[in-house]
Image (cartoon, rainbow, N blue to C red; front, side):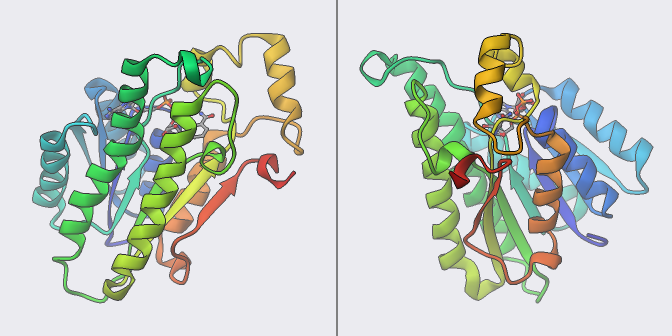
Length: 254
Ligand code: NAI
């Protein structure tokens, strides 16, 4: 990733933070965007402390078009281009069966987890298509195992993540002619603060139940997702586009 510029949304925490650090370790200059400005700053500082590269923190809400436009513009103003974009920012679902699912919760989930990815891709692609060189450029969206299979009482999250895979495949077709690849990663349950908030990691019964859904017999780690993201974002994956790569310990293989 030397000489490449990467942008990671939701980079203050979990999979986003770990991916930003992995991209920096591979040599990229990295813009870290998040609603959590202090967390984004912290990731940017860690990148510059730990790796021989530059980082930028941007406060942005991916569900706000103006913020997203500004996020891409600030990245390009600082680093001159955009080669790899990781659209990772997302929220966990509230739990309810579909008939009882709160409409405001549904709207918020679609706004951040689906429309947010659409807005990011829109502005990232606008920038990437202006770069008229033959460098490989890549978008990596963070979908979910729940982008291909359902999970009870999480219909809005499941619908949003299925949509993310649809957006990914659409962009792969539409921008292949301009040497821009679009892929998704589909993690299952990963040990991050998101899973702490849903309580899955804290309730032994639920932990056992969810663990048993993984043939590898455990939750994943953020670094295991970050390595897949780093690979898809890099020219090493130059013939891979339109894929949704499971990083799920076999969760969706059964
Ligand atoms: P996390 O909660 O540790 O990190 C999410 C980050 O996104 C936070 O820093 C948060 O401030 C930021 N964020 C939330 N809403 C935002 C918005 N509107 N604009 C900008 N930033 C925003 O969660 P985690 O687990 O690292 O999740 C990252 C992505 O991975 C999400 O898209 C999530 O749906 C997906 N995922 C997570 C799995 C898990 O088990 N942890 C499994 C499958 C997918």
